[in-house]
Length: 74
Image 1: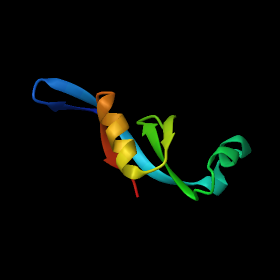
Image 2 (image 1 turned 60 degrees about the vertical axis):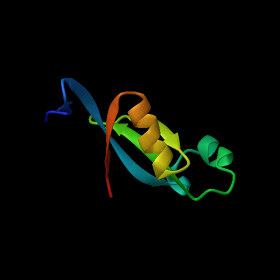
Image 3 (image 1 turned 90 degrees about the vertical axis):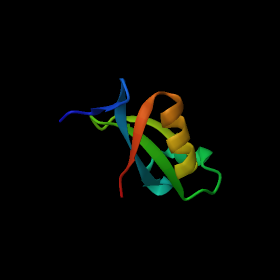
Image 4 (image 1 turned 90 degrees about the horizontal axis):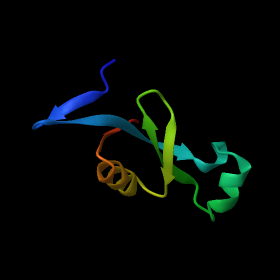
């Protein structure tokens, strides 16, 4: 699977953004969630979780700031 695509003359690495139930996360993460029930994960094309953030918009901003091309996963 090719996980890069070209924008102009640059290639951006695709990352996937998906919601994650806080209840499904390790206890140390749940303890820091402060009542939030859902976070958004940024995953590499290989499935590695790169980041967890509080909302979808922030996940997309984070990806773009790191020269990554975010794609939503439902």
